[in-house]
Length: 362
Image: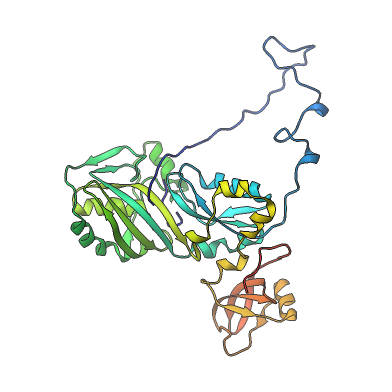
């Protein structure tokens, strides 16, 4: 599990690691008929293609842009979640804003079409999680899937846990889990760990804004966390268990917020698959939703919008216009570009071609 703060809470686990490559077909000498046990191929023009559906019957992928805030269930990979949303909305292009491990549930923002250009802004946003720490066992993965590497009969009281939490709040140094996606000399740490190599990861600066106990039993504590990009919830549980002298690992994890996106905006894969195209289009959130909390907004004229669309900078005017930093521009309520403000000019880094997009907010 890679509870990245580009990842998540409660009730939990079970992950699958599918991995399969189809062997290339090898053509042998031509034969008059199939060998014993060999399949007789039909003529090429009779073979169904794709998923058994003739190409003419497949619905054409749509140019659709916006955000789907998915409530991912336990057991589903982020890649499979993206594919399910893409299929349900028949969208051409899709991607997610921060991996959520199969063991975890919760918010997985999925960008469609032009919204994929705003993914970095969401990934840089604050995250919120609810997670359960099971005491008495530390595992090599720091979650319930791993192999126990240390045990203890001691169990902390709620007061002891609460007294220890401030040590992990603020700007701290955190050593990522051995099983993480961090690269070491070009290889993922989890690949090295699975191969039995000793993985030594250096501590990295992370920001944890809040930790609070919401439930406690002798065997388990449920904690809410608010943190920044790059924080590993599994590492919080591991380090908290070591500090308390009783060991611990994450046994359940749920992500409740990513940047501007929250649980009350979310939907499930099952709901998407059961709804019609019109209902699914209605749940899309505008592309610029990803930018609202991250960067200032500036309205521009049509002429300025055309310049930005051509990649040319424009001078920002007005008392409220930013003079530096990042900003995004809209024309008539439609997102045009996002870029850097340099000496009063907006230099576009990303431009948007929004035709059939999500409904706009007022």
